[in-house]
Amino acid sequence: MDDVGQRPPTWPRSAAVFGASGGIGAALCAALAAGGTEIIYAGSRKGDGPIGAAFRPFAFDLTDEATIAAACATMKADPPAWVILATGVLTLADGTGPERSYKRIDPGTMAEVFALNTIGPALIAKHILGIIPRGAPLTFAALSARVGSISDNRLGGWHSYRASKAALNMLLRNFALEMARTHPESVIVGLHPGTVDSALSEPFQSGLADGQLTAPHDAANNLLRVMAALTPEQSGRVFDFRGEEVPA
Image (cartoon, rainbow, N blue to C red):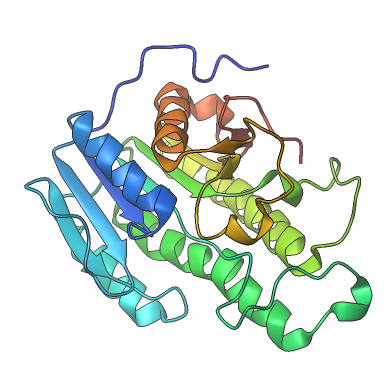
């Protein structure tokens, strides 16, 4: 086990949260503000982020690169020290959930899941990493999932979701290696928040054991504590909310 999460947390002066209107994203914004972060870029599809002196709301669409590029450009004058991607989908807007069998794989559904869980985050990285001054420290974290682990997959199923998170984890590793050459103080990781009481997990909460469901506020603080303890040597990996590494 790494020593992630064992040191006293220090929140950054500035941060950006993509997905600030979701359960975890809103809780992350609140926790950052409570911890003293002075500037919080808070992004959502409608651009109606949290209210408060620290917040800088912005609009973006994971499926529209132009909106992502425009949002990141507004941060160029004062880039965030932390970037958190609290985005992702498990059940689509039309109610389509994870496939339990290969027989249920649909190309349209798979493409939409990858667009939201893999390609969208990659486009955010493309534009936000490019505005970070050379050599400046940065912690970039994207919400991933333990089910994206290939070596830890013992049940199968959930094909599009698993594959999209596994692909995201590979991209984060790629970005970490590339950024290390010009930004040796950078940390780029995936974070597994556990099962959080949010819209994403709601359809799958009925079978959970007592204590397995985490409130958004607690999940946010867990993740921020992990981020605060990360070092560049841990870049390119995936950690859970306890600070323990998730196997690839």
